[in-house]
Length: 375
Ligand SMILES: Cc1ncc(COP(=O)(O)O)c(C=O)c1O
Image 1 (cartoon, rainbow, N blue to C red):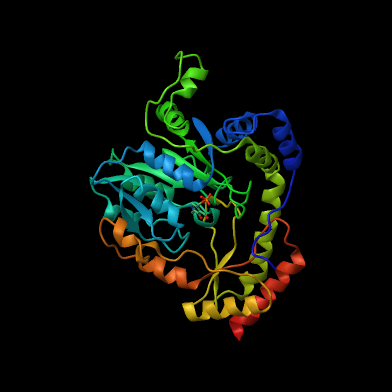
Image 2: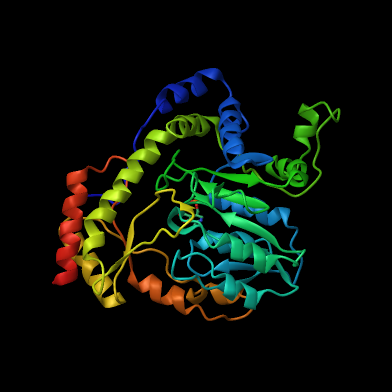
């Protein structure tokens, strides 16, 4: 039983063929425009740029901050490496913040302690597609005019917080379409621009530091190198595949919701001293990215992982605390304590989760897991 298995859910292959035959297979093609418009409309954004990955989108956001020596960025320690690395490589010193235990999102009270005049960005991750405590995070950054909120929404597309789409809160938000995510195209991502004032410059950086867009819009008579930038754009072949996935979003979300609910209804009656199941607090619309459980400690978690793996079930752990990683020292502004991150990292176990996983397979996974927790 694999942990993840991507599946075709709609017109992906038809669109891919059209993209090949249509002649525009590079970035900013007709399919990229349709995907960007679908995402822009859902999030209510000013613009959306399709990138080669979520990492690339985070890097582009980092470039748009124009970081100066001494600037810092607050990131969770409990996240993927590039949530942090994208800003470090743009010159920021990193400040690692802890998560709170309810959603495993950035802890607003720790962020409040860490904020000072050097901070240029705070980067919440909506872990597992469950929104962070956004009201509290917005409140703690209020009054810090130099601080931009950047949502790493790699897990949370189509999730919501108090009725507002995840990804609509920050100045920027980022998405991932990597094969392990809910909507896939192999490798891919997007940068969501929620402030109209960023749109023009974001296109310049996206277009390899040139004013190509102004040229194509007839605003200048030739295009030239005007700023920093890089080659960020998603090939239209991938955007075509992705459009097929996104147009099938109702089907995909319904399937994933059914998987989530089956895990929940199978495991909830047994939760207690042996394990906890993930929580969905009031006011959160889940994106159904994964289902995780928390064992009492690392030893019991590792025993359950081994037990599942021995039965051919690929359950996995997740993030290893970044603040304790070998390279963290080199990028850190100041050491911080992240005890919740350390505890959760050793206790968390993710169960196989993908669109096509059958109900009887979920039942077998749950029975095997329950056996491992009792052994
Ligand atoms: C929270 C988070 N941010 C960013 C990324 C990077 O995404 P990508 O592989 O699209 O660069 C990941 C990848 O798993 C992730 O989990």
